[in-house]
Amino acid sequence: MGQNIENLIIGSGIAGLSLALKLAKKQKVMVIAKGGLTDSNTWWAQGGIAGVLDEGDSFDRHIEDTMVAGAGLCRRDVVEMVVTAGPRLIGELVGLGVPFSAEDSESGQFHLTQEGGHSHRRVIHVDDFTGQGVLRTLIARARAEPNITIIEHVMAVDLLTTDKYAPDFSQNRCIGAYVLDRQTQQISTVRSRNTFLCTGGHGKVYLYTSNPDIATGDGLAMGWRAGCRVANLEFMQFHPTCLYHPQAKNFLISEAVRGEGGKLKDRRGVEFMRAYHPLAELAPRDIVARAIDSELKKTGETNVFLDVRHLGEAFIVKHFPNIYATCKKFGIDMVTDMIPVVPAAHYSCGGIVTDSHGRTGVAGLYALGETACTGLHGANRLASNSLLEALVFADRAAEDVLTQVATVSEDYATLPVPEWSTQGDAPADEVVVLSHIWDEIRRLMWHYVGIVRSDKRLKRALSRITALREELDTYYWDYQVNDALLEVRNLALVAALTIRCAMARKESRGIHFNLDYPVASESKGRKDTVIR
Image 1: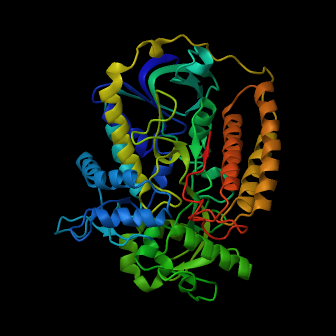
Image 2: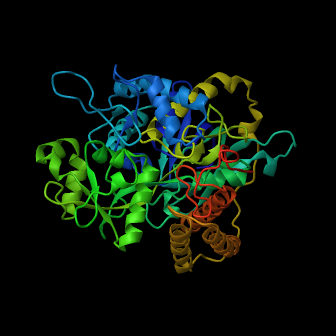
């Protein structure tokens, strides 16, 4: 696979593919996907894309809702930029053929739903599987574009940077990546003028998550090793309502279900959210997740329930066909049964620090989507702002590349770099070791760095993660590299960075809640947690 390319996009979700389509209008693009093109967090996104699309709504209201949810850490300039660009970019998706749900068959208006934290109906969606609807369209368009090369089932190992291979002590620049073919386990070199990390989040660092198996924080880990700053990793959003069933691995019950009137109840059928927040089920996600966590700790139960029976069969089947069918598959009829749910790690509001065009601190390297920290989400993401952010920053990054590329030296794209050399020659035959470490990391993070934390829990977690990282480093240098080793190595690094961020924030704000500092500190807390 070793070759030169103008633009290397690592990741195939909404950020990666929408960026690819924009760049391909003038330049060559390679998109590499860790799994298949549908193996991404985007594919599993249910709710929709937030945007001011109704005449009764306004940019100011969407901006204010985002700022309130972000608990004092959103960058207003970024929020304004993203919100105001939303309608135009949603319009582009409509033009590409994304089949957004209509209000009815006659009006021609799109159906907009309301989710927690929003003051107006502004979430456009494709039934209750928006991610699939958007991604199918983008995949079809990308496959038909001659300037886009798509390679599936390959994994970036690490980024190539000039500080390692051609240091001039003036500027560290990314010049591509080492890439592993997951089928042959062979590693090759891809040199690129511009490299884009669109690798999604790292929800698999937790025991319970809505994320697919590929979400191991690879982009975040590679960016950190390349010299990028990371920020706000303490703000991991826990989705309040993940389906609780032994065979349901990571299925979400969308925010939109509560937005349309679903009620959270205990096993006796008693509602409890009014005791925690006046907005009840429509309170921001961090409040709802902590409320459920509190109820579970008080009762000792494994889960609570989401009740939509009062909405009626016709409404349920029309508005939530995918959720209805999936629950039915697991023996749960939403029309007659309450849905068992539990909080699960869902979305990271922190990541690699970028500017308003997605540029990182390493020249030629961009980070987009969940792997980035742009200043939009602050301490807590407003529901359905994530797909919006990916669209806007893909647009901004493409604009930056297409207007600035003439000023970039061609030397970096062809700079000779060494081919990958095997670190160790021992075959990685102790796969059980990696699986045990993987499981230990996820359980450790869930119990000690979960919805509710404390200094004592964080200290214990960091001590153990540090020991696991040392063990993995030995394994990395002594054995042949494979995808399982790369994933657990990245996972351990992201876990350590998350704990360090959490330990540095001596307050509770947004998603981050520490029992030792239960209130927000107005004098010290309104700043990002940045690790260099």
